[in-house]
Image (cartoon, rainbow, N blue to C red):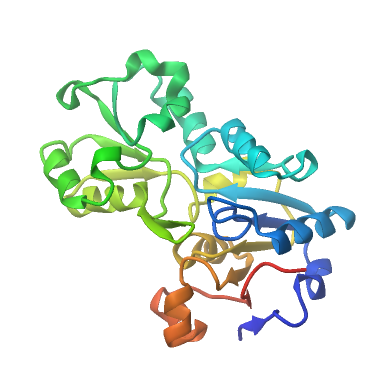
Length: 272
């Protein structure tokens, strides 16, 4: 049974948990500005000495996202535990793929993710040994057919996807993410290695979670909530995020069933 916490707030259940995995985009900010009620919530968790990780499917190193949050106005004490899907992928690439040539699929702004092995970046798809997908090219931001045509002769190569999200809302604008390109690649028979929610490694790399009572908070049923389900964590869905229109039209119970996700708690927005 899903319980709505809009009246009681997160404070009503906070003492039941030792560790909180909290999504950034759609929960703490909308890509443009911080959500005030969410920042209040983080401060209250700090007061209670509760551990929390700001866990995001961002194809960037931790330091880059940390600086982004600083520019948005988030105080340093709230940014102590930022962990990204990009950082998890980077740790893997350093040990397993560092000497191999790759072809980058994504915008130039993601270059900092592979700066340490930039000499292995191939400008020619045919000369690459694997594909590193961080997003979509700036000049092909909404045309998935382009990627189908681009990659159809390269499905024998492995793709490393640093952001399993299919879409994200930047303010009021919906954008495709790396996960959408990876899905196209998989449908053609390609193999994808994912880093980020809902896959366990990003949780386990981010902090010592052994023996902890965990609540995962996010706005995406495919990643935040399914990740919680796979790891047997309790989940809280922020309904004013990526699934806002679906939930308004069908209700959270029906939408959760459609995504085959179990939601323990809901809030319209993250609020203490």
